[in-house]
Image 1 (cartoon, rainbow, N blue to C red):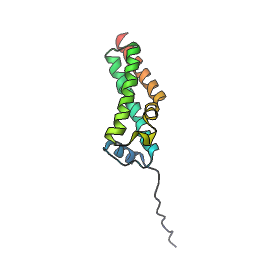
Image 2: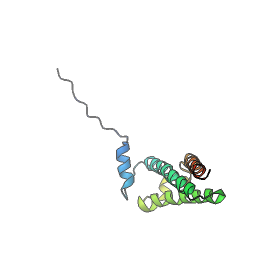
Image 3: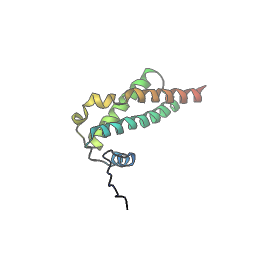
Image 4: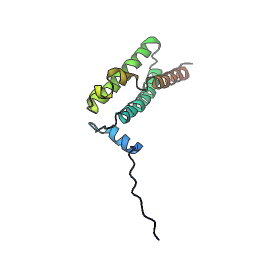
Length: 122
């Protein structure tokens, strides 16, 4: 007897499919949580980059922190509304986009910025 093959389709998006959608402008996002996950991880990558740049520059003090917060918020907003062409109200508005992953991304920025600055200037 041969065993019947089950056709399994996963409703969950794969990492690869989400990555491809994230890089294509104007992708369809039926699951808004998937888009917010992309925003979260995008902020993590942006935090690393900005942390290294600010550490190399050497930008210090409250100006650096305020600059990071502004850059992070504007880039997330621009990515969702201009690149992906999604109405910000569909994902909770400006503040939801700004605070999505903010704590973890801010910690990543601070550790990267301080480590880079300290290693280059001490």
